[in-house]
Image (cartoon, rainbow, N blue to C red):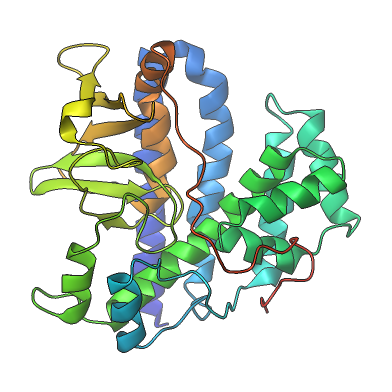
Length: 321
């Protein structure tokens, strides 16, 4: 990477942090009760921004030829699933333990500290944990956490926050290396994606963006955007089963509620896409919509069960380096 490229990227990092701080100030002023959550998120998001910056200098976690990219999309298989992984464990491992330490400052307290101690004692193989998280193998991580008598949700979150940037850069690399101009095989395959889960990693969207150029879903894990299907994102019921609610008529946030499965999806009015690093910030800013949906009995579903790769315990499955 040239000096000018490094300088440009450093400016991008500074801009991202500045944008996040501006949003946190606005959210904190409008919703003072979120002050503790903002304080915690400030540490986590800043770490995510720095992790993305560090990972840009290492090879991507997954590389695929054009034919494979096109075929997997056409077959409805998320691009990053089931592939040989090259994860920067030396870089990402400390992020997991640092995240546990940060979470220990919040409501999770001693629970997060016990997860951190378990990791530092070497009772969980870090490469295997990162690989399981990258594969969205919640079953394996939960089983290992229960075996070690630590909180599964904290272990899952800490691993996810560490490896999410690697998934983001991997899919960005794949789509940069494989042409996605109008009419190309990859573009056609992406636009032909008919599933509610992410075409890259198989996660559900964090929210949808109603942009000037049209509606797009945004992945909660890798940040990819894709075209929504008609009907419910989760169960594919007809649009007639969906209703929208807002906390205020002029709010830029709304929740789309599904009477079929009881799930909901947030939608944000945006002029353009939210940067990957700031997805969590926008998610927090729209918390009032989550509260509204929950008060009416709606929730967010578990990760979709896509079958394979073989669901082994998170020890002994690593292909990370």
